[in-house]
Image 1: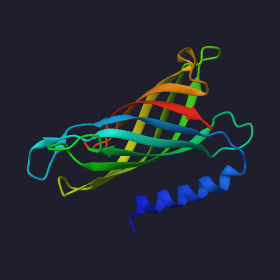
Image 2: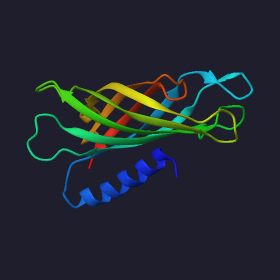
Image 3: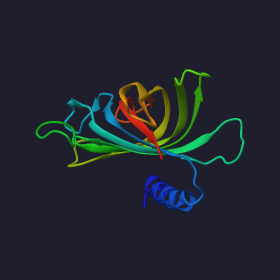
Image 4: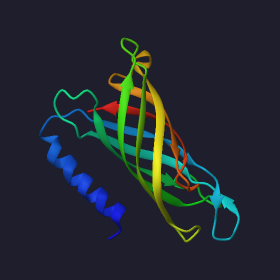
Length: 172
């Protein structure tokens, strides 16, 4: 089993174990677009599609900085048929958030490992490090309680691992 898949299994089991501790986590749903990268036929492609993720708190108590395990998956090519690029990007990051007092606006940053996997052999699978930087704002003005709009930039040496995600995050 590949290291990234093992990490996702461990994280899933950790999530189940921590759920009984009544910790506040977040679910993220959005649309992601990767950077351009070279396909197996030497043309250029990019992954686009829904991105689903979690932010699971891994620091307990009154720590000055909260750290989250933030796994996600970008489902490239799932929303269209035809000549688009098909594949997934799996991310396992540690992230933290900081907010401005009284305004609700926040920024977040993180680092970790990402893995891309082609469907149909369109490109070579790849694993590399990644950093993420983003910002969010409460969605309460749009009558969506406990949710925020977010934008995130994923940076990596590999084109299929870097890109932009626009989405909404909700606390549980």
